[in-house]
Image 1 (tube, chains in turn cyan, blue):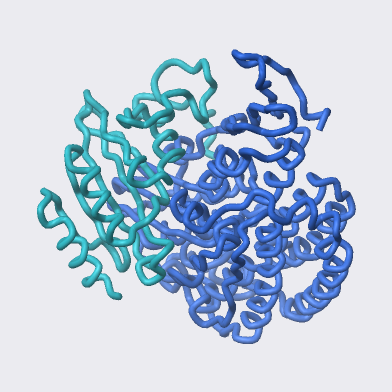
Image 2 (cartoon, one colour; image 1 turned 60 degrees about the vertical axis):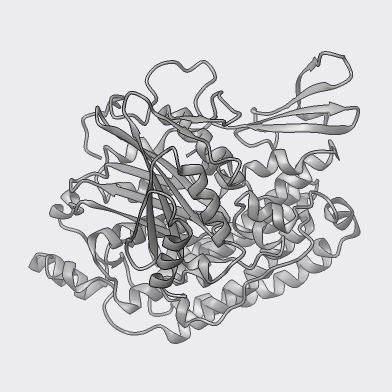
Length: 157
Length: 398
């Protein structure tokens, strides 16, 4: 299976949703979707064989937007396993909420939880709203946000 | 298990007890397990992570690209090559640099040496968790010859920082293949001993067989990775699925088992040690001649460092590389480390640091197995299952 074919399959599967599909690099298919459609898109992509998520990344563009990026791929279809499916969702900066994809991909349980903990993204429907990696009593700016500055020692080592 | 007990609190109806295991490292590792027990049976268990979290992802945002190499190695001390390689592959995709063939082979060589000693580490810890001190002593002893080999190649025992953008830091010493062959023969003999004393030991089998069974569909659904995935019958290995370095030219098998229990996970690791030895022999046989460092960067070296490189076959970066800039864009890379798949995702805005750096380690993805597998099992099965996962808290916490 080559990249073109995967892109075509993704386009066909998502044809009735408002999405942007493009190829990025030799084995990366990128899908941009708004948060209203993200669960539906994920469900259709899972139907194509993208059965698990390898990484969930939230990115902070201060005073502009947040972006949540899912890297999915396949275990059950080894031809598809060569590809990364990148699902991107833009969120407004003052309302960083997006539906959790847990009901589609159980593999996001810890990955979304981590982004909630460290970036302060609210994954609606995610059952765990407690700390994961940070101390239980941590309060303040989520540490992966740009406004959280880390002190360096001034030595560039 | 009495040494695991920290405090006990009673749940509402008084029937279940909450049992806290860790975090003061009585084999819990730098983490805590919160178990709810009904007599001797674990009703539910949740891992409590983060005791050794230091946010590598945030630190990477203030580090320069070369400084991130040692940074990503630190969380996974038994398996540093996987993180080093995954990071450099992602960075090279961003920079548009391709290492020469000899460097690809040297990377593969170190990755496989590291895989073997990482597996010995996992087997040793698993052994001591189920009460076999011999397995622990043996595995940690037998890790040593491989660490010596890696040291010959890279100059360091554990944190190699060997793989750099465009190639590797040093060429292998001329007598290296002979030394490797000696070690591999030793390990082959030792695996026979392990087989007699440990693998076919009825006590070990009684502790591990049928314990902590992970079904194939659950392994896929939960996104489990590495030997833990393959022990449940999923033949996914990044080296085959999305080949990198020299793996496309190498003949090896993906070890899988169908049982999905603690024994199967252990046996997959033993099988992978044998496959890694096969790979190392082929790599040394097929090792191409030529440079170990990309032409593009070699040209940028000042004359004295070029001369040093030609004489010693060691790469020394001049100061200007400290300010290496990556073009705006993003890249993602994955490699198969000893414990599973390492995924690194870099978002660059064209500066000297990444704008966003993401590292997902195999232990973090496998952490969900604690709550999935440790249910309706005996308390004494907790270490048997834990050990079989080859879980490493610093790697999960990052």
